[in-house]
Length: 355
Image (cartoon, rainbow, N blue to C red):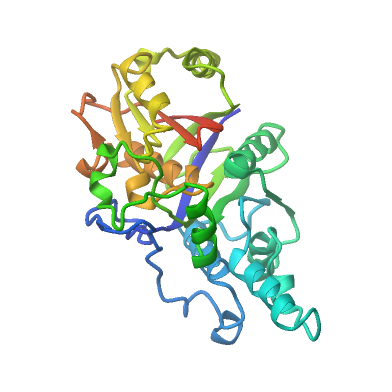
């Protein structure tokens, strides 16, 4: 299974909305929670409609619109999204209204917009798209499940252009809940560019909305070729991880020595970064090591940000200094691997190549 990434649209805690730019100006946060840099939504949404929409819906519609324009595609054959939390802001509003109003006189708007498939549905409504539409809610595998569905659909010849997205938002209440169970750093502030050197428990919170057009044919706008995705649930050892990566490489007639760049999901949590360190020092020691979560923060669909980063690296053949771990060993970049985990439970591997 393989597909071409022919279009990209992303809103993140960095200035990524402009598809022509590639981290020319990295924003260094000094916080335990990163918020997205949002554009003006006037050109994407009717102001009257926008007032009733949650922030994650507006971000996703804007990002998907840029993605369609980038790929020169007007109507997708399918829409597949992944999210772990859905429209969390509206979910919180509805639950609070239940408590404050003693379960009476509840307005339905927040409930209707709180469902996980609201984003993909709103995108379809904007486009008047009646094609296949599905949302995956698989925690740390949510976005990867959507990508796998797209790859299988393209392989079966049931579609030519598929919109695939990953989106999750951060709210104050969700941050506080996760803080109580040790998701985030205990320090008052965390300089994001120093996150890689942190060995304490916890990471920094993040959010984002990333969309891609996956196609069965190369176009003038192609960024990279996605050769495969593999999910590993609760690996028992680093050796099991190496075996799974090798299986993915072998299926594409490649070895570890063929991988020019690896994008790791290091998040500064001393409890869970050990797998990345092992791969960097063993199986993938000859590859240029990069990382990304200091730019977007930790969230369950952060793999979508990594896919954007990987696609831009392959198309531009450049590695921004802000993402390098150590020296740049790659003269040219033909094959790239993404390795990401969420809480050391959901492990994901992406294999990409230059078009």
